[in-house]
Amino acid sequence: MTTTKPARVRFAPSPTGFLHLGGARTALYDYLLARQTGGQFILRIEDTDRKRYIPGAEEELMRSLRWLGLEWDEGPDKGGPYGPYRQSERKEIYQKYAQQLVDSGHAYYCFCTPERLAQMRKEQQARGEPPHYDGTCRNIPPEEARRRVEAGEPHVIRFKMPKEGTITVHDLLRGDITVENRTLDDYILVKSDGWALYHLAAMVDDHLMGITHVIRGSEWLPTFPLHAHIYRAFGWEEPIWVHLSVFLKPSGKGKMSKRDAEVFRKGHKSIFIKDLEELGYLPEAVNNWIALMGWSYDDHTEFFTMQDLIEKFSLERLKPSPAAVNFSKLDHFNGLHIRALPEEELARRLVPYFHAAGYPDVTVDDLRPIVPLIQTRITTLDEAPKIAGFFFREDVEPVPEELIAKKLDAAQSVEVARRAREVLAAVPEDAFTPENTEPPMRALVDELGLKAGQVFGIVRVAVTGQRVSPPLFETLAIVGKAKTIERMDKAIKMLEALAKKTQ
Ligand code: GLU
Image (cartoon, rainbow, N blue to C red; front, side):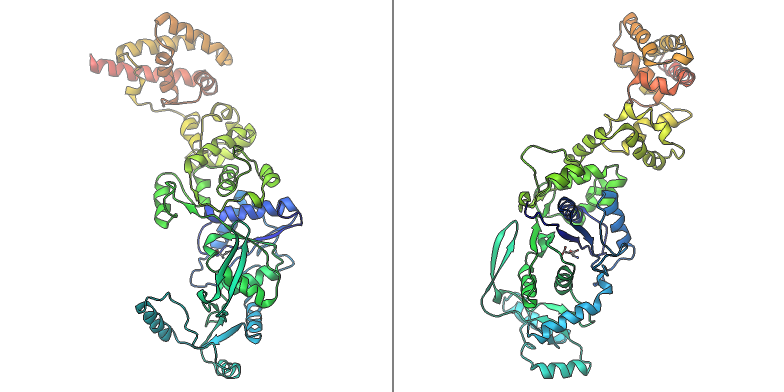
């Protein structure tokens, strides 16, 4: 373990969209570290970019985090000793610290107009230089700059990046990274509308909120040296910096894009947490899956509950190498976690999926006897109503042709169906259990010299309306004798009609 001291970690999403796999993984690692060390997990909403703000996104982010079970200790809805936890409510704090950097000579006012900056960039491009601020306002005497600010001249505040020397920053996964300061820009810290940018706001907040570990995406590696410069300019102790690996497309080729996300959704997959819920994935499985996208415990253990993860997670075993998003792995984990759920709990979780599939009256009590029949047969929860919805239909509508058994014709299948009905009709109604229905049906199979699949297949399609169903005799017991016989009669009529047609 990197730390035995209680860690204070934060998940700092911008409310610009739904929680996706990358964000969820960061939040999960934060949460695990906080729980493992008895520290705090903080939710901070980074909403200073008013142009990208999406109303409702904050609530959605919280809903998805809670669905994953990643409950925070401090946050905008809960408060805490270091609030407010929404950056839009902290404008003055950032202004105060920006002023401090200006006063100490680490930042300066820049009055360049957007037109001038555009012209500058054009010229840099023509010279084949990377775009950067050319330093025009760096050396305006502080007195003069102050006067212009007070006179209301539009301005931004920029970091005064040293022109010489190097900076060495330390990332927990990558070790020391040294860059030459002259390759770094005079980044904007405060925009002309007075709002601080991430570079300043997040550093100030991380410091004031006592954050011990900054765990974030590797898209922040290029500006990491700037962030360390800011910490050092203030004379603050730096947190432990952890930049997680990037996610690659399932093929392993290239980073995930917006377009990929649309393609996944069509294929019953998604990188958004709220979709994964709708698609029938368990939060346990999603956590297990994303935990292993960038971390491993050893080279073989795969199944982890949240409790396991809290105990076993360690920053040392995070991997900096990119991780391909593998949806078949998610299916695999979902299957494992479905089987690991107590039956009662699975029944409870399935209820909303039956409701969504058009069975609005289904209750936990209704599902209790069905769960043992399907628990090992489903990969996602939304499959349950597909294979077991017939239990809740008054009637089923088999495709007539599906009633014809393999290697038999319609006329032969009618015969088999009639005999099966007779056998089932002979079992008493109040003892219509697998123990009483299966043996005589097997005897019938032998007597007719057919395969079990041929005889049972007809009964299955007749009673469930589908070729694939939970185990047949358990199913019949739940459907009950009356409905079983009724459906057999209907199937026999269908087969008779088919037989007539083909005569
Ligand atoms: N608001 C930033 C983002 O959503 C947070 C990055 C960080 O964790 O520091 O990318």
